[in-house]
Image 1 (cartoon, helix red, strand yellow):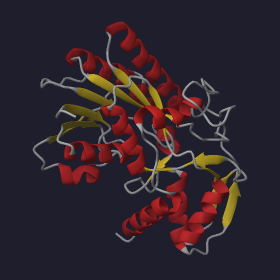
Image 2 (spheres, rainbow, N blue to C red; image 1 turned 90 degrees about the horizontal axis):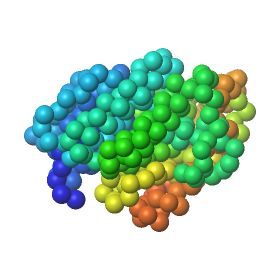
Image 3 (cartoon, rainbow, N blue to C red; image 1 turned 45 degrees about the horizontal axis):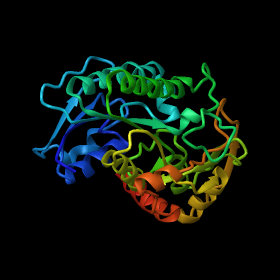
Image 4 (cartoon, rainbow, N blue to C red; image 1 turned 90 degrees about the vertical axis):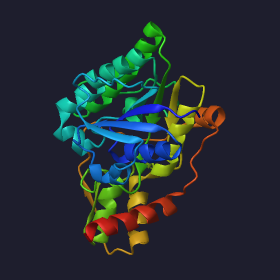
Length: 314
């Protein structure tokens, strides 16, 4: 790929920071726009002195102006965990709606390509499994999670509309559960929750009876999938995730074993609208992007556990 000037919103976040590293290493110039609501400059500290990297602290719901030529816009700014978007519901709505319009406007001004980080949450509590890109979803439009789910669904509609109306070259990646180092330890996500509790030998808290399923993709696999889509000539919607489906109960047992923990499992009430199933159909990504995940769950969890241990010992 020819060296490009790339804007990444949310670039100091978990997935965004890995993207920055990979793209810098591939010879591109990166401008990160982030309000640091859930991201951290710690994630991009190693890049701050790089001449091909710059950081702008800014909220995407406010107008964005970049004078230098922009070749690619990646919109990753949004609270992404249930805890974060419950604590910041209005900002989450605006990041997905106003923020998407603003970043599309930036791409339109520069005639840049555009990639939206969408989510498996657009499928809601799915009535079909696995979920293909053609599935329209089963989402509660005014439920407790709707500020995130519907903001992302609006974002997809905005991208499709700008693509049709202004002939913008756009791509959408629906990211399924992703885990690995740099996750916020207190963000309420199941992998970090379980690892922290297991390392402290505390009760592992499962919401519901543990039979709900999830599919976990290691962050390096997820980022490789996103970059495969970026580099492709496909202007479409793609699921990026790991189709290895397991129950939340099985995940808890695996983490207890890997940490040699004495933790016991405690069951709590299931939150409203919590999806019962998550399993991506990645046939499209396999055939059109030549991508599929490579890191198995035990290896990915082992790396994540070591990183969490290092954070807890600080």
